[in-house]
Image: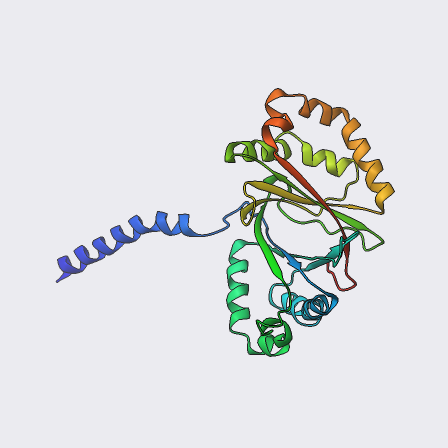
Length: 263
């Protein structure tokens, strides 16, 4: 009887030892932690659609996120829209697990669905928006967490660098992470909010980041300082980091925060 117990215990211990490494590897977001960002862009055909969507984010979604995961939600309109403005929404998550947990909670929250019905249950014949593009981004290791800019008059620039290949995209990220490009942004006072690699979304591979200025004149002055910076010239002069090799398209969008934006 004792021998059977010993054999049984040995088998269980052996199995546990074999499974343990697998479990350890499966645990998400082991240190060092990096944030993830849900970036959404809503397109409208008229002011009515924009109002329904903004009412939802101001009165329902933003308060719910603060309550559920204690994160500020950035909500922005275009500085100089062509026609009806688009609405940009940035939702930070301190770990990827929180992204999954939050979506599960919202799906099962009756109060959320009731309060947000005008947006969430808008009829197909009269939708709350024409299109929603969404991307999930993973923060760069050299800036693993967002940095909130001062609460003052400010405009934001959302920039995206698209690459033709996965290898080129990784090489461009290397410039930010390992070669000091992020440090240049910080040193020159760009007040970067985040840098992220798009892991799900459109136009991959790409990287996306957000920087902050007082106004358009301030933006022009900062970018001139960046182009003239000796450290940037040194990095960009390396043949393997030439934009012609690494970047196929650059998109820049100027944004202003809404009155209820947390960023």
